[in-house]
Length: 244
Image (cartoon, rainbow, N blue to C red):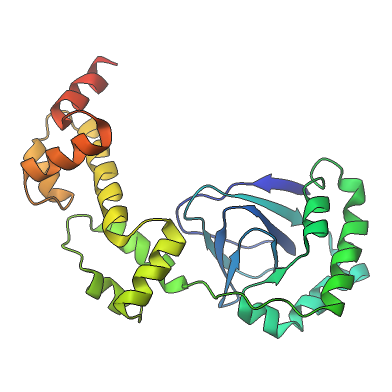
């Protein structure tokens, strides 16, 4: 099966037969067999048959996914190629040339050309060394769910960086590369999202209680942040949702 997928912004785990992922738009972060892999535009990465892998996409993405039959893998010796490509595994995947990426964009509509494309890919990988790619920080993927679970905690950059075993500067760079936002901006977005959820879930909950639970200093701080994002106060927004 060949299809284009968009992966969600939450950590998930899966296990299945041999699979190839090719980034087309955005990226998805993987951990396959204990190794980190960042599948971004033009990067092809394997997922070994039966291997547990964990993934998360920090933003909009489009990933071409090839679920390959065992006989294809054996005929093309795909598993052996990727299993022995240790450098590629450590660097996060293989960078494919533009011509192969253009051809790949048609695979889900014309699967009959997949075998020829795979043969070209294996030939290319056998003849060329992959460009070194920066390793994703999988520790960040493990941190994000913790931040979401405790929105009311007074998270500090130094604390978050320490949990990821990074300096504050390196953490900030990696965090922005993964999410597109600074840690402060991301926390604010998540706290407001949680506040909206709580306001919808319990129309009687006091706004001050919701504000403190979601990590805002007080109701006034919450109201300012909410108005900046939504263009109205929390109270007005809640009334609108009730009317709708």
